[in-house]
Image 1 (cartoon, helix red, strand yellow):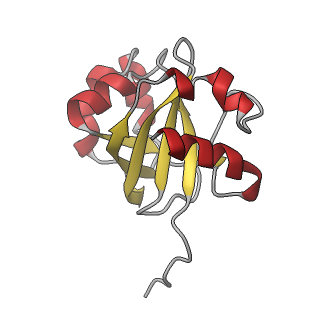
Image 2 (tube, one colour):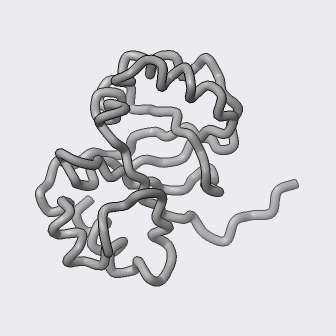
Length: 146
């Protein structure tokens, strides 16, 4: 039996449109399989920061499944990979999470300029645990826009 979690964690992950069209995928399917490198748990909230040229938080998702093996269920995503060999290479990664879109926003208020004014240090290169106290101002700001 798995012990109950103390809290739902909130995270920010970057998505690079030079490799994967996250906007196209979420707009069409409202779901995406994402390679998992951190200990995300089902029920966690993930904010997706779309890097240059957008450089803004655009999506709020919920983790519907974590620590999943690769599955052919994700084949619908192939059309959103800029280079199809990146999809083939991603199959080798055997730890995935399934994200479901909760809401999307196209607001200048969540652009890098405003994120920097509200507690972010630099563009995210990897995952940020927004539940950590050092990001409380940033999380509060993001949630106020969503």
